[in-house]
Length: 225
Image (cartoon, rainbow, N blue to C red; front, side):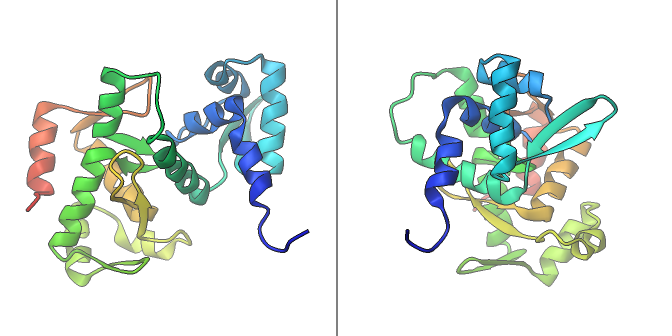
């Protein structure tokens, strides 16, 4: 047996259609019950429990207990990043589901806990072009000018930097094939956009729906060159 990470094991966990549907549902960043995940996967509750046990064993999901209920979520941001990358590969293959919902997801969606899609890529590009972010290889940093910008938006930068989670991370957008902003700053930026009332979440998918006024305000906040 060759040394190194067991890619085949992780791939087999994600590769099952039912488990893939469960993981995709959790990409919205919301914790779901086993019954809700069974519905997403189109399987019985008993089968869902078996799948979830395997995902827990593979450390792809985590479970939290509240009262009599158990809620499942992705284990960490690296799982979300891996799923987003796989979606990028899959997007080049023939798809059977098309239509307005797919267009909405391409425009703006939640990727675990940050903004993705065309709007997410626009925000990242704007921050980079104006010198608020500095990218060197895989290293992404928030510049002093960027620190002032996000603080002016009402982001608690001190709280973010004190946390263990990385402040800035790049995430390859599966539909745009370009970078959007992840990390704790990406999460905070999405929270600010929601707090401004520019968007609402589609309850039937991961789509983030901008109002007309919200789109205008977003374009003013994150202009493109």
